[in-house]
Image 1 (cartoon, one colour):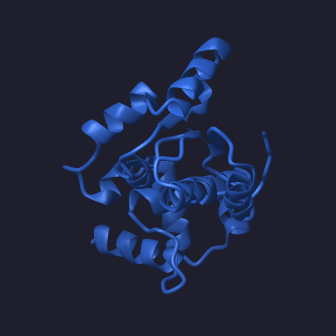
Image 2 (spheres, helix red, strand yellow):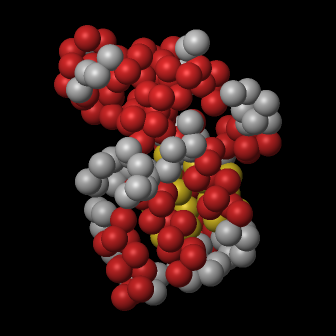
Length: 190
């Protein structure tokens, strides 16, 4: 049975109702297009221990990738989209995950092994991410940041999601990640 879904909750519901052999999950899902897919994949593995999940992403979300892998049992994969060109390799990776193995992009492994554990989180931000965070610290909206940097609002959202991930700011009902990121920026720029 196959299902196509467009939200994290729909993914969880589809896994429960259709009992697929595995799930292929994009890190970014509506409504926020940040890390909803990856968080849903982690939740799916918590609900059904060992459930095989193959995650596709534009970049390595170290915090969540570690959490996904740390779940321990069952197949898991994390591939970078821009390196998934060969259909046979992709299907092979999916089969490995379905069968309880792993399929990890070499860049994911490198970041997880060497990572940036020895660097302060602010030092892991790219120049563009620091630009976006600096404008956030000035109180600018995503639209104003986009206009100021001559990029799209969607790109601003991607940079902000990367900042949140690199600073270890998981989504929470108790905290505003934007404010926490700005505080980290202000603390790191002194």
